[in-house]
Length: 171
Image (cartoon, rainbow, N blue to C red; front, top):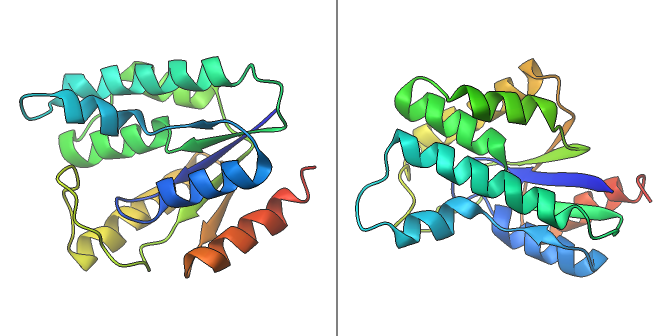
């Protein structure tokens, strides 16, 4: 099974493309655990919550990876939590870093910020300058970790076609 991760800053179309691609390939997909976790909190999240989210995300990936299908698509991953933790708290829990390094995916699709910002109570950085800065953090992190990645730009249809073209090399 090839684990394919859609990653990037907030409001870049990760969930939309993950669900579309998973449907096209009739494969399972791992939902973004942060969204459900944070929606249930009756307080602001803190640094310790990121570790809990990371563990839930990882366990969800592990459970769905046993399906026997050719792909497992992930709407975000531990990379998101690592980057967010370092961006917000200037550090990241060692469990997150170690687990990220020991469970690399086959490929990352890095969603660019060239799509309009969509307001959401869980999103924190609508300014274009922040979105670009955070995107650059993702790109630098993927490069420094030597992880394979493809940048997705443009409208949804163009992104979906690019993903299909790339995935055709894996089947």
